[in-house]
Length: 566
Image (cartoon, rainbow, N blue to C red; front, side, top):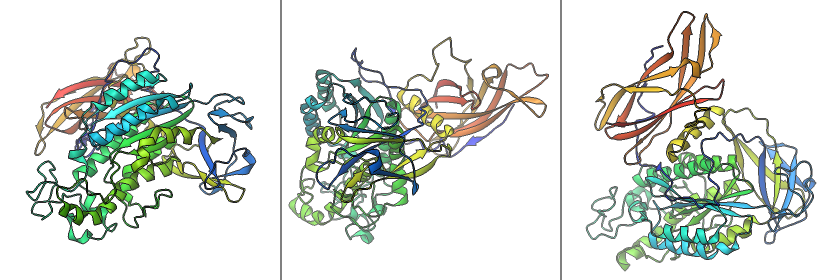
């Protein structure tokens, strides 16, 4: 079999995102994260908080709730009340997970530190407070800590319940570099009319506002109107998408811990904007109508959290200054001029955090609340109702709206808003991306008892592909004995999927493409391998590549890692 196909869009836009290697050795009692597995989630569990507007409501039964999926009432198959970290009542039906009355329910706190958009002083202040609040963790609680600097994900510790170990981890996290001064949208402090540290700065503006400022275009001079267009397309907007991708991959890497699952997402704020209707009403998250592009930027993280049962608690690292304090500006005159629009810009950044929390049933911890982040999260996750149901899975990548109602009047409900019916093709792509990102083995890789014959990978001579890019011919040899061949049209045929994950030496990567391959073996053929040829366009830099061939008939994945210097 010889076929050629050119990948001109899937692997072209290599920008700035993560390579990954664990940064520290794991403590002896820590559980390793689960990498390299497709998570088969058949039951959807909803963590539901019920209040009367102020206080939590306890003692409700499953018959007090109504569950709507895409507007249709759906039976609640599993029900447990968790009160103070323990199962409070006899569950109705077979609880998932099975909990006896009084049994402790541990919570897994996954901490993601966004060093790419954090200012070091603000980040360190919050990390210090997190360390001080560690004694609030219960005996069945565990925490893992991951940091991302815009290029590399570092696993600081996997799951551990050791407070001294976590204290050491947070001490080490405070020593890491933070890049918020370079990536966070802000007003320039330079007297030159632009900020030399910001490559997207506008020249010649009397206040030196950068391209992300609402002043960047005179059409967008009204707070909250059109701000999305001043942000969208900027380098910081692209970097925000890379941070969101990294956080999504981290969730997939920690997909299967038991108990309640929470991600504390520490960030200095992303330039992900709403179109209009800003409001400071953080409690209800009234941040206006979200633009389609911005929803798509946040969507992978929201979908993955909902699919894996993680509740997101975004933590604002932007500091405790008043929205009108002018602390970021060089002179009082600049601060006075900018303060009128600074609030709108901060609402843009905080609005993304509110959206993440609201869609997954969590809370956004903004401004001063960030200093009590762990305390408030522990308090918020100690008591809830655990509802479970089994959807009619179609594996078509569709998103389904879910709504939980209490049949008694005067009560308010907080829970996730949707779940995704991911296809197996999407799940395999997520697996390949995560394994490549973290540099860890594929299922069966390195195990002689289960590993299939490796793929053969060879490259042709690079050809010019435009400014700073090359086109490379790739030949893949796929062993017939490692794929499922079925009779079809007088030959034995296998329908396969090729995925290629690529990362350059600066941490840049692109979306993982899915390329269909048809392997045919004629009856008289004596060949041991099928050959597939295609072309890929890459930047002229060293790359590490992961080639993965998925056999949907068997579920097996053949893979090979290759380094190339272009």
